[in-house]
Image (tube, rainbow, N blue to C red; front, side, top):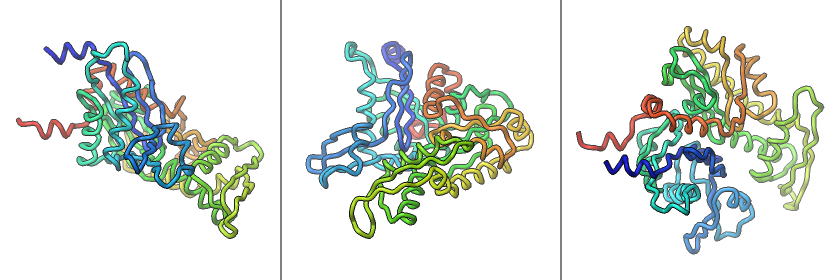
Length: 351
């Protein structure tokens, strides 16, 4: 009786807890938080100084007693306490200050395909500690497919390639479940590292993650039929130790990340090879869906299409596709029952 009563006054919450960004969907309000998964800590006091975009601006610029940390690595919680505080901060931002009687929310969280039992429990515990009443876990590729409005409940094949910050997840979905999949730790962050390595080996330039990310975005926006664009990178000269600025073409930048892109393509091809022929026929007719920040690289859809001989479509607003799917799952209790993966809380409860 009390559960039904409190449910009336609570707002269900959907969380896309990503390596690079955390997005929160609030029932009846839509996406209310879209912030980097970054926290700034004062080592002297143990106090959190900043979270999200404000903390991201401090990267590479903070004094020794301030630590800028990313509490999620490859989509998995690496620092429980910091993740809990970060989530609590974001969830508190979503609450209606004018209505303090609102009960703790029911929360749906997206998790990677290869999540272990220990990692599942860590996600559930951190969300419960941050203020949730009940936690449901859903695989990110499922929520992405729902956000893309794919008919995942039908007996037909849907293929999703989600190129995130720490992980690229590839899955073939049918009857509300994952039939075949691959997950690799080559995604947006690895592309940034490729660019940093390129600057170091070609120009003796040490540059930061933020600059590499900006260069990647600018180079990734240049269409194949356009002339290469000159991009300026700043950093420290390895030899002299002094500030230095170099100019690289967008073509050079795209070449520096080509090996990582090829690895993603090979993983897509491997996933197709282990997929039942009937579902491959469906995918060939329907095509595969690209989502995540990596899908915004200009021409990556065409490169994948040429390699796989399958139509490729980049979903509209790929950065929010997964959390929008979580929002749709929140609205449909029957779908939530179908796609939620077993909870470690259930396994621990007495029979």
